[in-house]
Length: 331
Image 1 (cartoon, one colour):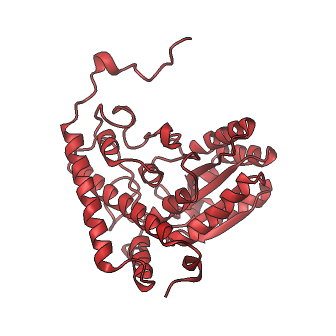
Image 2 (cartoon, helix red, strand yellow):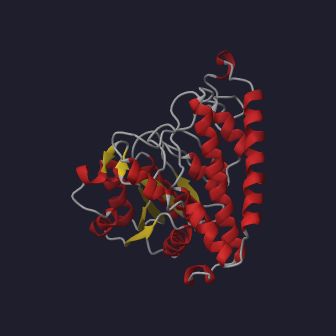
């Protein structure tokens, strides 16, 4: 049977939520395999397991709205409408990538989609989002900015300064915390005296809500309410999404890591947001198992095409491309 929340949401939106999560999962798994084969240079921070947060948040936004991201930002860009070919090319450092091979996996962006950039600095995207929200309020364009960040970011000074300014100036911004219980390899309880990050919201004068980050409908409903609040001029909100990354902080290893037990990882994997949602959609007669499998196969073919495109793309030429898009030309 459909849940009470699902019954309020159109079939079109439900299928959109599903497709975007599958798009993230299949791209990320492919990126993990390629990284393990040394076909992607540097670190790769996989978003597998957290798909419901990016998708639930981004589907609640308009296409013109903006987001800021983290070092795990490819999931956010896909959720916002990012395309596989330039993304895979960027992973591989190719000239056809989103940032022409200069950003890699941690600094991917697409201003045309309102993706203001992923950030390798913990918490670095939060003040960027507040700056964008300030500009939107000044311009009176009715746009909203959503900042994605991890639980560890809320221990960084930049987060607190940004939250304080956003509330003091009543800005149209949503603070979307992806609480996966670990800041890199450090468990939350070792560095926080509180259990719920959302408790920090009240100190700045904004509502803070907690949702199941493995339930895309719950995230979407919370994000939709926060976006409406921001767009109506009622100021910022914080949403804490309790979620979990299935793989290591950087890389593909999921089991036997020294900071998490195999049992803990398995328990969270049993709450896979895509499998849970597909089961719900099948019960509600919105999407059959065969239809879901067809979507997986369709998207996998798109991922495979993107890999071929990236591998066939040229590397940037340092003699001509090193300084392009780095400095603005004087007017």
